[in-house]
Image (cartoon, rainbow, N blue to C red):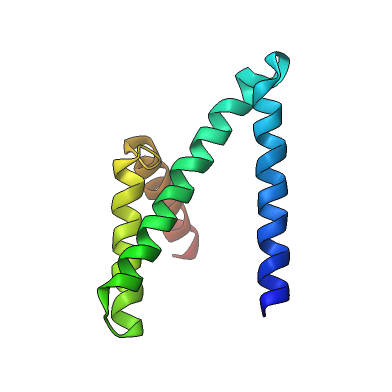
Length: 101
């Protein structure tokens, strides 16, 4: 388990480091920097949700529900999820409903 987790962590760290390096190069900074900032906001939201669930002392199912709710709120608060995202999700769900009917 730790081998898989360590490999995944190393992969993410290496990928993030390469993106940060690209964001420092003037020719690519314009395109890469917004991506890096977005990843930081989402990662911060995930971290906040995990910390909230771990510190809650709730049973597993309740802690998971708390983490999901906290994550959703953190995405909205950080500006990752906004009205445009909500419109997109609604349109995808509406499209799926009309195809399945």
